[in-house]
Image (tube, rainbow, N blue to C red; front, side):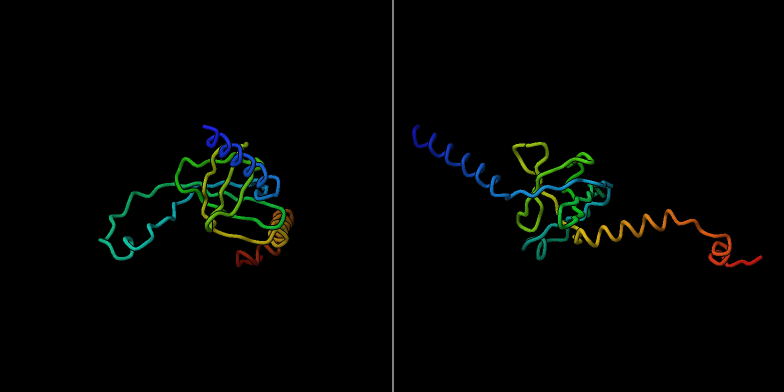
Length: 150
């Protein structure tokens, strides 16, 4: 009994110490869309086993997660992995995936990394998109785009 209690205290201290050291990074979820799940079975049996019957297309959430230095596009494993928008979440890398904790939850959800881009480059792309949307198209330019002239 004493040893079990000591082990539990030691594990709790290790988790607290790991969080204090910054194992988790923080980011904000700025976009969510539903897309096709892209997970294929992997491993020896998938490569050399019998042909798999295609499963019905499942819809999985895809999130854009903005951190200080990197912007991630992550995909959930199933349709029930939801993260609220504009929420600051804790995440860490784990086996080529992102392990995400929302609202100090005791468990982590695993997400596949679909894309990564440096935050500085992502900010430039967002600024370019904003500028393009705010710039009015002149009538002459509009006619050239359509291919007709008056």
